[in-house]
Image 1 (cartoon, helix red, strand yellow):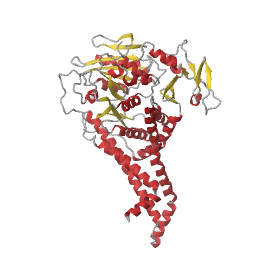
Image 2 (tube, one colour):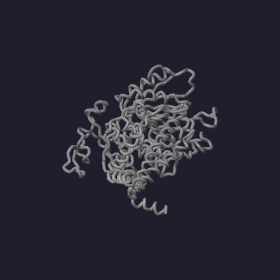
Image 3 (cartoon, helix red, strand yellow):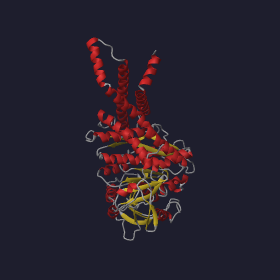
Image 4 (cartoon, one colour):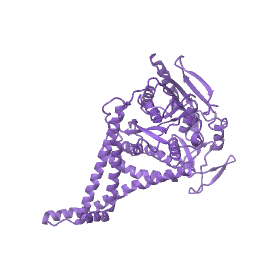
Length: 569
């Protein structure tokens, strides 16, 4: 009898049944994956070997723009307990607002450094120049690696707006060296290729924009499920460590992928790891808290999330393409599986509202039994509400656990409070379920993406053109009279096709999305890429300004140097 009733529920309320299963399954998996984080601390069970000299780690931080809060992050990052480290601050131009503040910060750092500080710390400031053949962030990462110390064993690519803990670098190093018989033997290949961390973003209590803050927080929580296990499928571009020797030797073509049209640094290394059978390890102690204190407008928020989805349309091999297309398909189909049935059930219940009221009135007035169909709908509505409530509870519990984990790394018992509104979570979830499939589809259809004022055009899974507005070029001091730049074509008779226009003797594809942007400038990709590799077959030797602060001398010692090629030649 129970089986028959259950079958009827499935047949007559299929949408509601799918909704319940999808809701409960997803949040149950998330809850289980986060449960094991309870009690995680920042201390290693074994004692640190004081006799071992820790290998040199180069921390490369690509930086764009400045806000006063970044100073606190830089202070936290340079307060590491790791004994052998160099920090490489990389900006794209000397006129970037961050450049001057970096120089001031480094002066402050060495001026306030205690004489008893036994750490070996070197700081560098690098001006990478503008990129015309790959993402500016990747261009900065490569320039920073070029300027790093030749004795560096590990390179940590780190966002400059992350509040690291004193033990963060050592945890990442130990994660890579796990299982090695002799970590100091450079010929021994580690079983773990990359160590990475991730961020959980929560709105602090004073946040005003509840809807968008919950939307972004939910986006991070969903992505965090990829880092649920120790060996995870992806590296996070905000914090991942790799052997410097692998970069210098261009193993697995990692530099080729980054340099030649690379857009997503973390997706590139993740795809290489999958194809070569290498492991990416995510230690749960490398977790960062981000406070959504300044929530951008809806348009900028959506632009940020869409840029993340664009990474799924970047690839260099057939295997990359298949893997990324699978993720796009899942994002485009999985969420509607939850959203559409939910809206269907809500619509159905709304349509029977008058009938339900009348049936209840009849039942109360003359004891007429209510309709069995109403009973089924009421049961499904109850189950959906229970599933939705459990989703809210699990999400808040998950955020609380993650925030406490971050606080435990800082020696605190509990994390700082954060804002969590039930209606904000529900509304943010609905917006995400509508927006994510839209972003997934537009990722494949749209050929351009605007990232920090740079208009990137993609084709065949890679960046084929970078364009900047003349005003930005002049602001950065990069627009010279003799610079060979070409305007994007502004007109196309048929926006549905890709007409070609002759400009300065070259053929350019006119893209419909760029016609609404006025005055974008682009450099010929082949020429710019050739300029980047003319002195070295792997990376190139462009001139880079390096500002080095030496603790043994006063002030800043500035010089222009030929950047070392990564193969040591």
